[in-house]
Length: 241
Image (cartoon, rainbow, N blue to C red; front, side, top):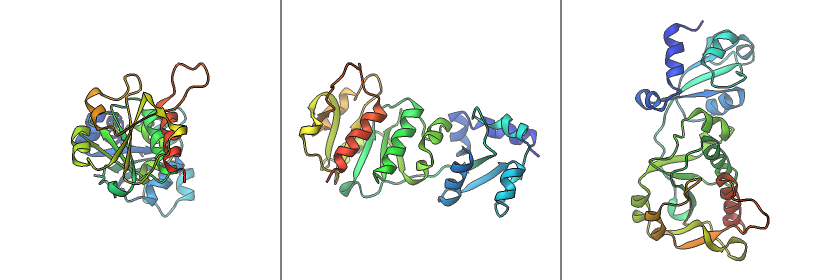
């Protein structure tokens, strides 16, 4: 049974200030909980319906009703199980020999989640975000990753400082006046793919760190290309042998 304090606590984690204060976040759904259980994240508590418990009787959890699950879920259609896990300090891995994605002031949780999923698909271990980007522990971000969240290192930092400390890296900047990416041979070792804000693009103070301006040519009449889609295309070009 779900207590009033537990309900209040889980619901409070829908807000960033309480996630930060408690150093915890919420994970929902059968697929996502499976990924969480296989990850290195510490689980604080799991709340599940009887049907989920019957199929996962070795997992320590608190049984709740569908109505109780609905009262703490962020999903339109609650999905049997919800967990509270501890946040984890991620560390960048092999930046000097890997392809890293850098995100400047990205704001849309769905876009961010899709980019994390894309990074996982292409075997990209690191995503570096500006400090004013959307919170990776936002439930919409986590849901959009479809489990990839648990396999990618996401670090928030001052991007000016990051690029200054890693001045030996090749930095591909996605810009409208960049070179046609299909006519340029990109590499993926020791490189950073810098993507800008959905509406404003890359911040002016980061332009000087870009070593190679790249763009995706337009063939139709669309006004713009979604940042998550653009990131996927550029990752594919970087990974092409």
